[in-house]
Image 1: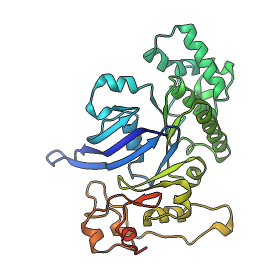
Image 2: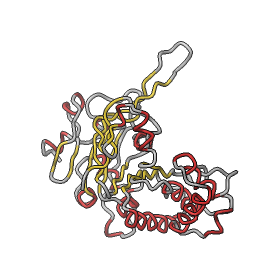
Image 3: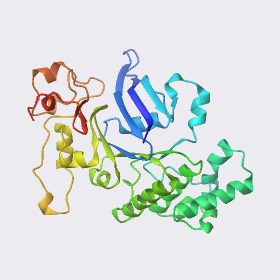
Image 4: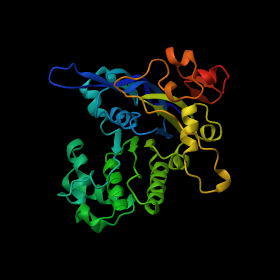
Length: 323
């Protein structure tokens, strides 16, 4: 397999006004993120709220431009800022948003919602667009008569299927899934996840799966990227991450994941202290104020991702064999 997405030092800083006469502050949402996504795989990006997952999703879908770094998608460096390249990649990368209730226009019929990307990005006739939209409805498990109905007539799971159909109508290579099942009932989540797995096999898709739910990630991911305060702190194959997590933050996340089997429940790792502000992150390792293994080096020097077997982890305690 070859890398279809490659990020090198990608950062996103927002200028936030703090008052009439106060100087604008820089909110560091994503900082120096470097990773690759292989063609046909599912890379899951996980972390607690505010870690930069959704900001990274917007960068990957070219909704926002990174303030620093290089991002290459399907061989094209979008950091160069060429509008023609970005326009060409619009059909290559598509996104499915978290909330199926807010992602669909309630005033449009389902057929019009699915056809809209074709109207903007293709030269297909009205009849051709209609035929392709109905075919896509069938591929996501909906019926032809749903074409002429409005979103409010569907359940949450059906609406998410409509959103998936809209994302796939341009035949993309990459699908960014931003918490695609977190707003759905647990009984519906499995059917949507099964649909996504089936579509990936049939259409040879690459998935970037954004989630805070490690129990869901365990069933869908090939590799997992763990983020903390805007930075990747661990990247590993799924099996390695769940069997032998390296970073203290990853261990804490996994210990908080509910287990259905009582025998699988390990000791809960409770992190002390509050999540630092992205306006003023701590010096050194961002995790050091909450880390039980932090020493003076962790408080003054920033670790970088280093290889430990199949895992890359940014932690001095791991590098030095202290944990």
